[in-house]
Each structure stands twice: as C-alpha cells, then as structure tokens.
Length: 332
Ligand code: BMA
Image 1 (cartoon, rainbow, N blue to C red):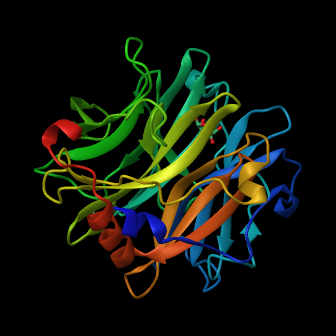
Image 2 (image 1 turned 45 degrees about the vertical axis):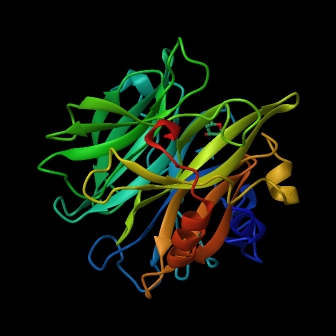
C-alpha cells in the first residue's frame, strides 16, 4: 500500500485553472464542477474546433446555478463559451429547480444516440436528482426528478445491464451519519428501483470518513468500471474534499471489487485551497484520448474554477490494484 501511496498518479495541468469567471462572456459569480465529453462526429461537433465540451456549473450573481457549455479543440485552451446559459433552471415548469441546477454528469448512450445529463436540482425541499437528454447541447428533453430529496451526485452507466439502465447516486439518510453511494435500476430512465447500497463511508478521520459520492461517470475498462469518487473529511475548519478510486464488476455493477486505501487527488494548490469553499477538488467529468488510455479529469477547484488533472487509465488500474483495501466483503 505504501508503494502506491507514494506515487502521484495524476498530474495537474500547467495551465490550471483552465476556466474561471474571467473567461465568461456574461457576468457570473463562479464556474466550477463540470461534466465533460468528447463530441462524436454528428453530435454537435459541427466543426473541428468542438472536440471537448464541458458542461459547467455556473453560479450567477444571485447565487443560483445554471449549466453552460464551453468548447475547446484540445480540451485545454481556446475555449468558446456559450453567450447565454445553455441549460438554465426552469422553475415555472420544474419547481424542483427553483434554487438552481448543479453538478452535471454527462454520458453518451449509443442506444439512444443522445447524451444524458444527470444533475442536482436544488428545490426548496432540498437537492434531488434530475435527468435530461440532449443530442446537441442546444435543446434538452427534461425527464424531471428521478430521485427525490435528499440526493445528488448521480450518473448513468452508458449501457443497460440485462435490459435495465443503471445509475449511481448519493442519498443522505436521516438516521446514519454521513452520506453513501447507492445504485438503482430502471427499465425506462424514468422509474427507478432495486435500490442497493454500493459503497459506504469509512467514518472517523479518514479522507472519505464523513461523506462519499460519485465524482465522474463510471469509466468502462476491461477490468471493470473504474470509479472516481469524492470523499469528504470533517475538520474543525470545515470539510475538505478528496478524490479516490474504486472498481465495480463489469457485468454486475452492484459489486465493488476494489477500493483505494488512499486518495489520488487532494486540495494542495492555491486554486484548490482558496476560493468560495476552501479545500475542495470535485471532478464531475472526464474524457479519454485517442489512444483509449490518456485520462483527462476535469474538476471544480474550491468551488471557484475548473482545473484539469491528467493520468493513464492503465496506470490508475495498476495503482488501485496495489492500493486496494477490500480484503473481505465486510469492508465494502
Ligand atoms: C458538495 C456539492 C458540490 C460542492 C461541494 C463543496 O456537497 O454541493 O457542488 O462543490 O459540496 O462545496
């Protein structure tokens, strides 16, 4: 375990933070937690300059969040940001969005020929999980609330399992300290059931001791579904957010087969340690390079900017093998 923990498996990009409010074409307060995709041909990639799309959480100057698309040819620079909110909250038709929409996770579904956007709708009754579908990041079909409050940090898997869609999410139980990751299934994306606990918090002083939740959507690999997940650790000054790894069985994603002992990303730089909410690294999206291995992890930094950490999927899987803490089913 020590060998793995000594290696930094993710590298921060030298141009971090990649996006801040200074990059926005209209007045905003902050921009952070973004879903990410590489646009397949014919899916909104109208020109060669639309290779990476970040669907960013933007907090306006009233404190309400909406989603806004930023496109870049290389996923690093030359960002073109939509002139107006791409997906604003729609409280007239969706009262659950009254206090904004946050933290999108975007997934391409071959079967639907559309992307799903799983996001947190912030209702006056608390945060809940909503889904929308889009082919072009211009028009969106809202499916509404799919999981009621209090719940967030949801993402779909790209394909069905035995005819059913699967989604990881993070309910907040009243009678258990902390918040944990669950998985649920649906025949139609609208009706969800067969809810099962997937991963629990470790409690105490651990980096994932007080709350956990999915970070990016699951990454499909030959060895299983690679998860990045965030862990919150309570300190006297507030909660610090870290990122760790887990692996789910490829055919049965209810089975967590590896979980990292240590975190792979922690708030260390100035832009991660100081912002609207200090000491936060919070990925919501990833893209993979043409080689099928280079991983770009886009994360919100201190709820104030968007940054990029890069690594190799193969490298992360190897690291996780060394750093695995699941010695028995009871540890899961
Ligand atoms: C979580 C989410 C994120 C946020 C993080 C740190 O609960 O609400 O949107 O980035 O807290 O403030």
